Image 1: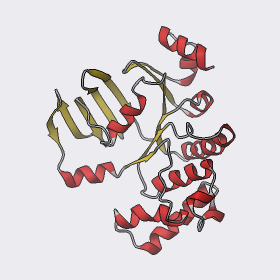
Image 2: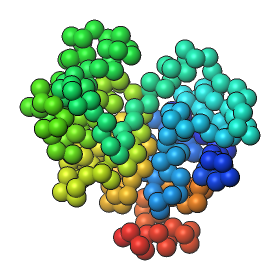
Image 3: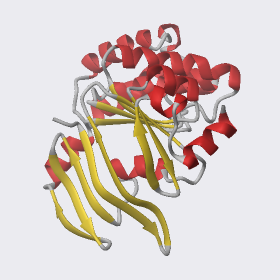
Length: 252
């Protein structure tokens, strides 16, 4: 059973077609990295999965349930709002920017959604938040405010915040692109540990070393099309797609 699946997903902004007929399935425990040039549609695809962008046409399945079906910019079918909310909560998302609440401590940032959305008792949310801070190596920063943290530390807090909702799958939208180069490694190390722990992950990234080492599959997107989908060794060592070869020639 797939955790996440899209069939024939397309997305247009006016006359600009950003995604074209995207078919992708993510199974439990898989780590899939999406690579490709800027403007390929990678982030738009990720944002479409959790409804930050509305697809123009196609189907989205979560836990093998039809979450949304649209054709020609009109909704054909979707699940009821209560179940929709439940399924959306199964996806955690980490953005390029950390989006932490500056007036709340690190601990409060992580506790907020479980208490407000899942109606978890504050004392239970605190236990989970402290455990997650330990997992991302920031136990000593629980009472600090975001402004006192480095970019890498803030992104690790953002990862802990997403994990606090106990999602089945984590979506990462270029999580290291806003970081100084020396801070990238600490965030990738946390993501690698998540993968080793069996977390299902869909990662848009420019970090080719991470994709080669951690991913089960690497997906190459260009011009809104899913142009290649294969294990890392096949993508990086034996690329058959001409556009993929050209892209790798520039970034490696």
